[in-house]
Length: 456
Image (cartoon, rainbow, N blue to C red; front, side, top):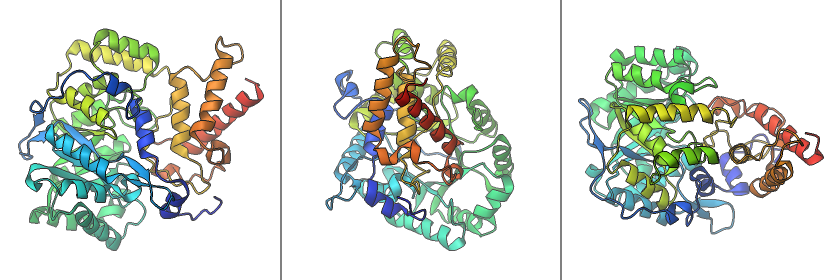
């Protein structure tokens, strides 16, 4: 645990992959839980909403499959977990059967296993019926050799000789200097443009995590590069209240729409926080639409804007997939009154100080063994459930104290809790949400100690 040079393979051997567990927490259900119990009739097979635009011409399902959270199972050797390929196959078969045709992955998703699992499942379907998106995720090694090898490996793992939608992964921080270092100086951008000309890349775009200046700079390159699409974070909270160094989604979307560049939407659930909301927010949403799920409000918001091509959702369980298919087959666009209602809801959400972790695991592995996402997600869960007391004078202090501490020990092993953070900061540069992770871990650890010592 004290080896600062621990790599991903060694990390997996120690702790495994908890993708399925995390996804269940994000959706607020287990494989046989709430979503399954509240199934609302048959799942439509022929009513999916599709979008197409001049220059795109593809008929893309408005619900896209994000392949970051594939289900996992214990490895045969007992060392960690592995992707449950049969479950992935079943999910993809079901999605395609019900009209989903866009699948988004990356070389770094599910600790590097997502592309291979996705490729195995998709290979069993006609290639021309589906759209595959993946990314050049050259975060650490910016060399030509590494970037080219990653590109070729994506083709190999996905078992295809062309990529429909290829993204430069997570641009926007560091401005022109960072962009040039990752893609221009090493010749990768020139190579990718030639690959697009040759048809091995059908559409070229980027995913954005960064500053307004960084976004504006990337759009100045549009005439030179011709971005076919851009992937942005958009939901009803981030629309006007992104915060923490992120950019409001209304600005990102409007700037793309002005240039007639289609948007692909990530984080429609704000890392799951818009499906796992405080009880009074649930009641508010249910009162307005008793038959719709809490998550459906966020997906309808993300799918309503005209220049949205597809809305990505990481769906680990069939219940997640079924709920989203109901939302998009067909989509019922939001009215102006609905949008105003969700803006009021967003303002209520902002009163609850959750940490904007979306469980992407880009911060992992921690060199000191801390399960960073699990710590942050447990804290968020307790905030939403009212189990973060401010003082011993709180009416439900004893109940909340016990719920936080017992839940913490159950969800995060003691050797992987926040008290092991030394503040090295290795995790911060990789966080797309710009979270000051050591600061938050230390804050949570202080809170835990106050609860244990009853000194609040």
